[in-house]
Image (cartoon, rainbow, N blue to C red; front, side, top):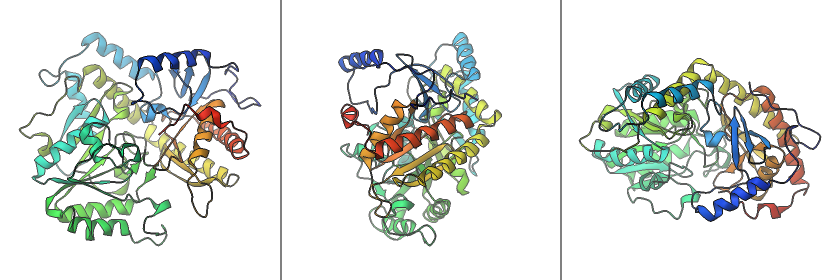
Length: 464
């Protein structure tokens, strides 16, 4: 695997320079003059000039271990030879086409491969988009048409995208100023560490599920007029929160009772990151539809809906000019092949367990770690001011993330309180790289909790 150099005494990699990020700062200044801020979520002054495997290099040549993986996009690592080869070969065959009028063999082959990956009791078909946002927007528009029901249920903390339809589905605090849809009801996600009902996992009788059954479906979103329940099997941007498997099974039973579709957003957790191809599969619940995005195109813009045929065979147009572009689909076929054939499903489960074990060991030394959780290689750990009160520590999280950057490791924070450190590295990450990350985390936590950090560094980087 892509093991990085061991850390020097100061916590920096041996190939990492000690001068200022002058070239990176210059590029950021140029960006500030040329580009708007509405599509920026920044945690530190990093400009990526080169990437390979699990490593990125900034504009000054400094090397970093990337535990973000471009927000879960780089499933196979940066520059995987099979993915690069597929892209180059497809570029030589057909640079672009317009799938809605004349498809390519490559896009059809990818649709067939995605159908095969999705175990469903119903006949299924595939729709292509370019982002997870438009895939979820497709659902928001087509589900009422397919079912003849107008209402949808989604969850607090969810991030489903930033088109008008997908943003309306979302329940994230970062989107609170965006108008939602009156036909969409948002309910509490099963956040066991901060249960709204005060339940404990060991004795919980799923009041969150009863709330949907006994209140929501009887009042604001009547079961007979509810088309679908849409959720992530593990909320990512909401704080890396895995839903209990028995909650998902119970939700499936509840949906079946009312004839409601159960839809999973697999945009970030899907395609192997959870340790199975699709995260919802681990619960034993079936899905009527799923959305796929981020890693599907191997770094190129590509998304998909895999759903019961009646959703995607309606007499209505739902298309984008560049959706299902042949080069992106070639990258998608190669990505699926690498994940399936190179043992990345098993690797995600194994390395994710190592990572969680290491974080729990760190929690014995650092009382600010309140909770460690995850599925495969989507892992989150929550920073708190006090373990008893569980008061979120967002400023500590911002300091920690920046300090890790200074020490050569790239992470970010997320969650409704901005206090959850999210780890979504490439599935090719090695044991040595996990050890390096944990060593940096230990050093960074010690520094920021001891006051060895200048908060002035955070002034330009507000993150979420």
